[in-house]
Length: 114
Length: 110
Image (tube, rainbow over all chains, first blue to last red; front, side):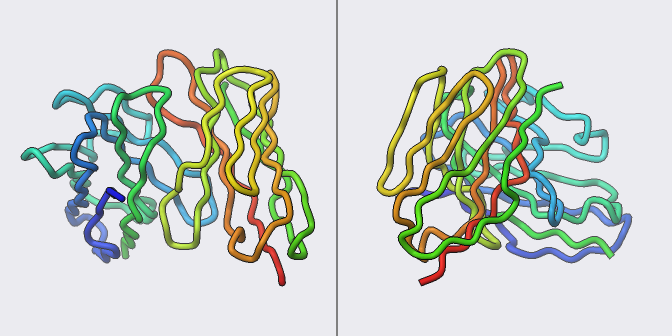
């Protein structure tokens, strides 16, 4: 069964450093998302991306965050200057047709900011 | 404000002991309610989407139902492999995002 692939599975970084989290969505999917889950808390929406542009973003997704689809297969989340509070599990998700459709989530990247 | 509340936070069942998980929601206009299963260290795995009150969906030992204020996930004769955290999420009209609850952590003992 096709799946969303995320790399790395774990990322440790120093506060203030830039990190790039990588995702390969399912190949025929057109809508891409990033969510995050701080330990013990809810899964939270960060951003949605369609047709090579951001379609919606949350208050969390400030100027320190950016997303990119650099080629036909990868989808990345960049955090420019990490903060301690950015420590979380980051999930990439994709779906075929957008709203109302089931999302397929990757296994996540555990980001630890020291 | 759109929100989702799940109860109980945790549930311990004996194998074969049926039960129900609750998801209460408030949303400006419900496009869909989603149930996901999450295993430790993994991403959510899709189970069901419900779109309108009265709708029901089943998959193996799981059955999801929806009213205008809440959804239930009924687990019939659970097995240890059903142990996981079950997440409920809602999506409103005019938005891409899913709003998740904190989940119910289910443990099924042999």
